[in-house]
Image (cartoon, rainbow over all chains, first blue to last red; front, side):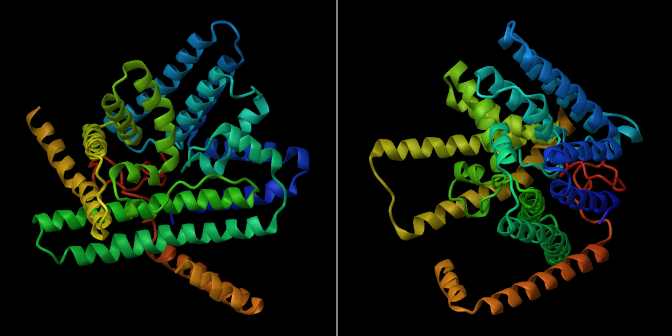
Length: 367
Length: 66
C-alpha cells in the first residue's frame, strides 16, 4: 500500500464514522468538508480545479438570462480545463508535470457537465448545499463511478441507519480490496506475468497473452476500486449504482460497453452520443465521437485516439451485422452461436492492445 | 447454480452461516493485509509500464485515480 492508499482508506473510515456520529443536520456537511480537506491535502491542483469549476457551474446554474449560452460556456470551460490538465500530464516538461496528479478531475468534470446540462433541461432544482454534497463525496470522488445528481440527492435525503445495508457495504469493501490486492496485484500482476514470460517473447501468442493479462489487471483494479467506493457509500447510507456487470461475459462489443464502466458509458451515451446524433443524424459518426471522447477521457495521447477509433469500428461493425441479420429476417439460434460471438468479442478486445500499440509506434516513427 | 446455493444456505442453521461468514471474512482481511504488506507500493494500476515518462515513484496513481 502506498502512503496515499493508506490515507485514503483511513479517510474513508473516518468519513463513515463522521457520517453517523455528527449531529443529524451536519452529517453531510461534515462529510463534504472533510472530503475537501483531503483533496486539498493530497492534490492542491485538483482542489483549485474543483473549486473553480464548482463556482462557475453553480453561478451559471443560478443565471436566468441566456441560460443556454451560459450552459454552453460552462461546458466548454470544464472541458478545456480538463484537456489542459491532461495535456500537461502527458506532454508537460519537467518533473513537476510528470508527477502531476489531479485527483478525480476526470470524474468531477463529467459530474459538472452532467449537472449543467440537467439544470438547463430543468431536471434539477438548484441548491448550493446539495450541489456541494454531490461534488464533495470522497468515496466516489477519485475512483468513480460517475453518479447522477438526482439519484445521489434522493439517497442523501432518504439515508438512515440500516444495519443490513451497512453489512453489505463492509462486504463490498473487503471484496473490493481483495480484488485489487490479491487478484489484481498478486495473481494477475505477479503470478500471471511469470507464467506469460515462459512463452517466446515477441511471438503473436505472447502478445495476445500480454494483452489478456493487461485487460484482466485493468478489470481487477477498476472493478475493485468501484466496489470499494460503492461499499463505503453503502456504509454511509447512500446507494450508488454498480459500475461493472461481468463485462467479460459479453457476447458483442455493444454489450461489453454496456457492462464495462457503466457510469462512464451511460454518461457518454447521454451527453455525447445522443447530442451528436441529434445534430448530425449520423449514428456511426456519433459512435466515433463517443468512443474518441472516452479515449481522451483516459489520456490525451495518440494511443487513446486510435483506441477510440478501434472500438468505434468494432461497435459499428456489430451494429451493421445486427442490422444485416434483421433485414434477412433470420435469427441464428443454435447452441454454439453465443460461444462464437463471445469468443469473437473477447478476441477483438484483447487483440486491440497490440494492434493499437503497433499503429501508435508507426505514427510516432513516421509522422 | 446460484439457486442451488441459495437453497443450501436457507437449509443451514443461521449460527453456522454467521460463523462461516466471520471465518471467511477474517481470512480474507488477513490475506489482504498480508499481500498489501508484501507487495509494498505496488498497489495502483500501470505505474508507467506503457508511458515511459511516467514517474514510478509517484504516490498517487494517475491512471486509476483519474
